[in-house]
Length: 109
Image (cartoon, rainbow, N blue to C red):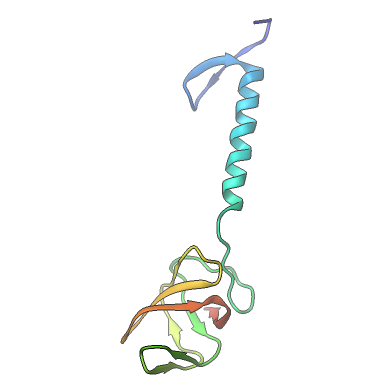
C-alpha cells in the first residue's frame, strides 16, 4: 500500500485506505438508488400519489363482482393498502370481503 490515508468504515467497522472506502460508499449509494427506483408508485385518477393508510373516494360507480352490489361515486374508502401492483389497491368495506380496486377509479381524499 502506498501513502494513502486510512479511514474508518462505519458500516463494516474496518479501517481501510480512503480511496477504497470512497469506492465502497459509491457502490452502496448506487445500490440504494436502484432499490428506490424499484419501489412501486401508485397514482389515483387525477395523478395524486397514494400511500398505505390513505383515504380515497370512488370516481365512478363500480359494480362489485361476486357481491351483487354497486358502490356509488363519492363513496369513502378509508385506510387503503398498496399491493405492490401500480394499479391495484386493497381495501376494506363493510359487507364486502377482499375488495381490490383499480387506482384509476379512485381519488385521494
